[in-house]
Length: 273
Image (cartoon, rainbow, N blue to C red):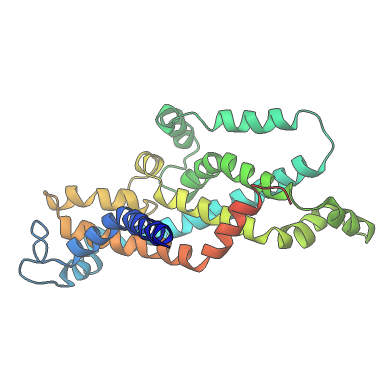
């Protein structure tokens, strides 16, 4: 009995330590955002003045940056999941040689660091007249996130019995109809988890947004918050933390709502059966 008690104690202690390690930065961020003196948390009490300053200062363009991030991330996630679903269906259902080579080639292409591509990407977008537009961000984001999405959906689609789409084809469905009416509904947990990961990756991206946008018309929230220093001439930690807290809220809400689907999507595609 003592052994079981010690095991439970170590288990709860480990879980609490891991939770504190993961949540510590967020708790510190919220504490600073509510402090009157960001350099000394709690000195002088707590206030919502930092949030009011971020939302009420037109020159910060916080709402513009946030809406840009939400729009660009949502578009990128939808397009990426659509393309990855089509590719994953083809790889798992069609009889063709070199499937593994295609997957590893896609993975190899994704290993190029962003900084090595940004110069050429800037020249391309500038030549097309797309600088400071949503298209300048969505296209690179889709290409950047697509390999991961493809691997997740391939591993998930491979676990779905082929008899389902064969039955759909016998009933008169085309391959595309079988995909959208049969396979995707069955694979909904995997699709949702992939879409959420795509959204988070695009929402947090910094380098492309920094180089390919010039003002609040298309600039996303990570770059917008980084620009707070230039606007004020100093580092306004209270405003930065308040903006970061409000930016983190949508991601935390999405993760909390779709947590069950994320776990199912990432675990079912990893095992047989």
